[in-house]
Image (cartoon, rainbow, N blue to C red; front, side, top):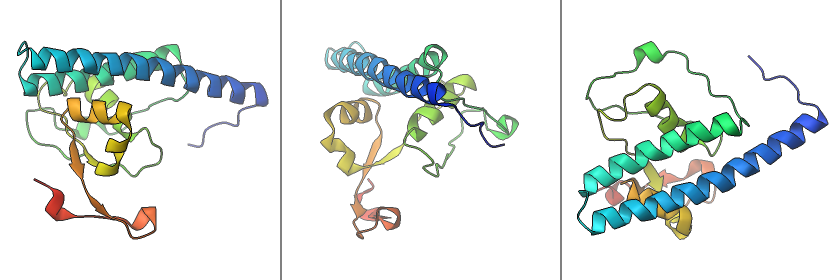
Length: 164
């Protein structure tokens, strides 16, 4: 199903909604990461607890903010095929947008499976150059991976020796 065409005003409202979403999301998520890091440093929470709680919180935050600033609509089809037990699961994104990570975290929360197993993502280690994003990635226990730069972003290859 193709999305319907937006008129000029709808396009502007969608852009404004996306911008407002981004500002709210980044400020709240960053603050949450700082608080969770402090809880870990003070030994109030174990590292694994911090990682799980922040990933679930980010998914919940992303989902709730979409209700306030609905600039995209997430539809789930095939949810009945997703394992809900405490078993390892691999989800693969095709990078239709830069929102893959948030969409997966939202889905984990909507399907109520994030509490039953850890949520982990591989990410390109160059993203550590972005302070706000890298704080979330580190705090939530995401896994950095080096990539061979082939000169074409779509053809970059993971360097398997960077996985630990």
